[in-house]
Image (cartoon, helix red, strand yellow):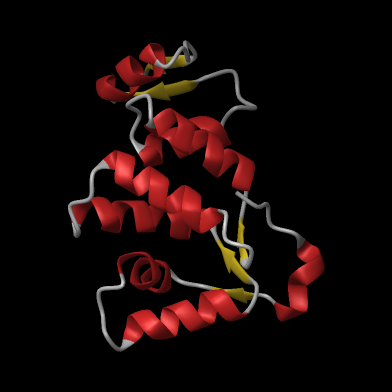
Length: 140
């Protein structure tokens, strides 16, 4: 996954979740080719929030399993024209997803790594974090 680089600033186009989903699923005969042209023809910036929403859409609306989603998002993030905000954090969060942590929770964990821990009422998150070797997630 490539990291966002401000040096492309002026020529870079930010893309929304629906463009990412059209690109990955190729499900709309009119929009999917347009998404391909946008992404393949110029540098694009993908915010962490777009990655989060894309994972959710692929899982909840399309029914893709986590392994397929992780592969698709990694491949997408590796495209030469795609720059992901906080790419290392997103990649590390995808690693956690492979251990059973929900992607949103994995992003919370990785984006909060500078903190002494995370307090939550989500017992599933606590169990998944502990199973992944992250002992700094505790019940509030």
